[in-house]
Image (cartoon, rainbow, N blue to C red; front, side):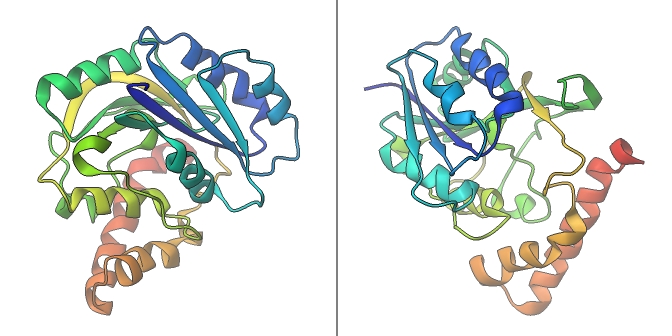
Amino acid sequence: MPEVSIITPCYNSSPFLEETIQSVMNQTFTDWEWLITDDQSTDNSVKIIQKVSDARIVLTISKKNGGAGHARNISLQKAKGRYITFLDADDFWEPRFLEEMVSFMKKEKAEIAYSNYARCDENLVPKIEDFKADTEVTFNNLLKTCRLSLLSSMYDSKRVGKEFFPEGSKREDHVMWLNLLKKIPKGKPLPKTMAKYRMHPTSISRKKQNIVKDQYLVYKDFMKFSTLKSLYYTANWAMNGFLKYSKIFN
């Protein structure tokens, strides 16, 4: 049974997929399984994955195009590792990411851990300063902004259980982290830059004005907050998101 399960959704990721695959294959920690679910790609993503001959890689083709949350859930259902981590098909890990994260989780007895990550353009060239891991991430401070990134985080499924993503929401990662942090006092930071995040100017996560309603529903529908409380946290999220990314595209 592998110690780490890597969860990856894939959809039309061929321009970046080979670099992502190489970053996993270069990991100094080798006791992992990589569960990739292709979400009905129309490019050659599946062929790129199938060219890699490694028994630790398990490719599943989704029966429908259900979005990233749906694809991650398919992989999560099959995951056997104690430590769960996520890597989107266009992101990149430094070679010691898994080794350092697993070691840190064990040393600190952490249920959730997270590291710094570099914020890069599509060619993995840094755009602005690295995103620094907060000294403390709790349920309460995560309500105002999602300070946890999937590609630089890991959780212990033996201690907190598997947490699945709500399907149909563009903010599924925020809901998932909030649900996990309901179970524990706080996550613990590893203050090293261990990953590279590609910041696409046209990506959904950058078009925040288009998903304000989806963020509001994080609080109203999933956290079951009142309308006023939901509006309060949505306003905080919008302001924090503007401050976080405005330097890049101005």
